[in-house]
Amino acid sequence: MSVVDEGTLPADGVRIADDITPTPDDDGPDASTRRPRETPFHITRNVPEGAPGVMAGDRPLTLVVLGNARGGTTMTAGVAQFFGVEFGNRVDDRAEDVEINAVVHGMRRGLAVWRLPAARRAFSRILAERRARWRQFGFKCPSIAPVLGTLAPRIPDAAYVLVIRNPLTTAFSAERYRGTGWLRSFFFASAVQALYMRFVARTDRPVFVFSYEGALQKPEAFIDAFEAFLGVETPRDIRRQIFAYVDPAAGYRATRRYRGSIDKITSRRMHGWAADLVEPQRPLTIEIRIGDIVLATVKADDERPDVAAAGHHPTGACGFNVTFEWELSERDMAAVRLHVPEAKRDVALWSEEGVG
Image 1 (cartoon, helix red, strand yellow):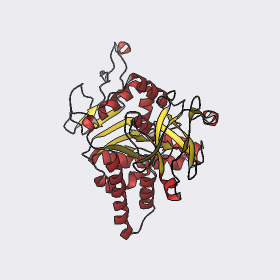
Image 2 (spheres, helix red, strand yellow):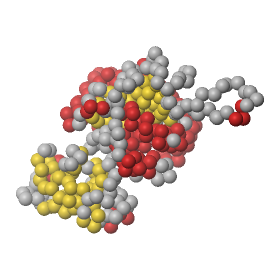
Image 3 (cartoon, one colour):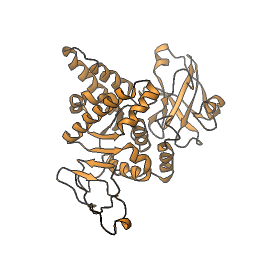
């Protein structure tokens, strides 16, 4: 693929990163004075020049984060959530949708042929439930690669973000954290990336492809490009949070802005904690809900030194205690959720056992 000047658009709908310094390929007597060639690390496909981003105007959107396991998908999903993409309240600490994962893993394990239609319908049902609740939402499922071609037609208003990490680095990471041999992981990661690129080449939906290593080396350019693809503008304080989040030395402790826990719940009482990971110094006002029924409204500012010690909050001033006006049944208690009314978002629960 040839390098293009800023503002041009090849016929296949590809826009290459604009931060490129073209230089002659041949060496000459003044070669030592030339600026080194800067290799682009992100590409946008199927987004016409001048078109608004995929989130602009509150248009319906399903943002799908693609990539290898141990390949930068958690970082990508986390940044997307800072930009305002809702990943739902059925996500684990890697921002993977547990219900979608269950369907995909079942399909990959080789369901009997007569069960595949039911699996596809289950996938469609999950997405329909998410869409009914959130007009713009996203999900991440690294294991979807082998079945993406089958499931993609069932993803409404899809846009894709594909993160590409050096497969050798991915393999070493898998060996370190999961105990799988690096050579086997290398072949697997390479095959998965090939499947994703084959899909990217064939889909007519908007796609943002970027290098994980490039994003870490040039976080500002990465954030700008991701913002442009989505069509959002991020306040300066949120950008600072994203910079800190992308820093690989800091790690990725969480991928949701609103985190918390229901430590204990009985028929008449409940206590736990809730925090805004972007502005942790600001106590959250949360609603205790069953469905759309608000049982109580409370400010989560009680001292919780155990939460601070576990690294989930800088000061621990994020706890709450609630007494219900009426007695809850076992079914009611199982359905309780924490909701942030000002953001219209649910709190992602850390664990049922507390700070985990």
